[in-house]
Length: 87
Image (cartoon, rainbow, N blue to C red; front, top):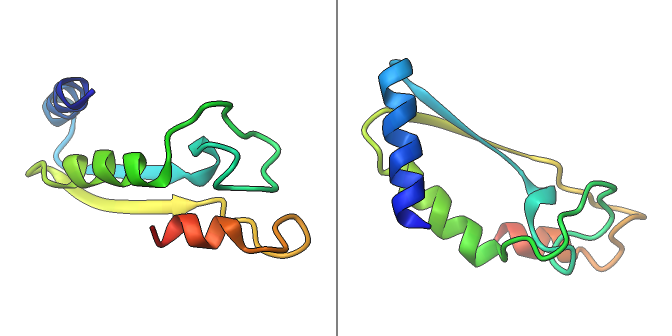
């Protein structure tokens, strides 16, 4: 997978001056982010996602990151999603 990430970051770097990395947390395995209506069955763990994001942010043209879609409240009363974000 790391080779694929590198190839995509290089492709993007040819198209733009700065790369913005955006992550919606509903990409994570549903066991780590409860309450999302768009969960990905068998998605990556928070640790796996963190490793990929870290690799992307090492690229010289990576300039910013946004993380979205953290359900807290009635849809995640045990705050499992919050724990995944900080893993």
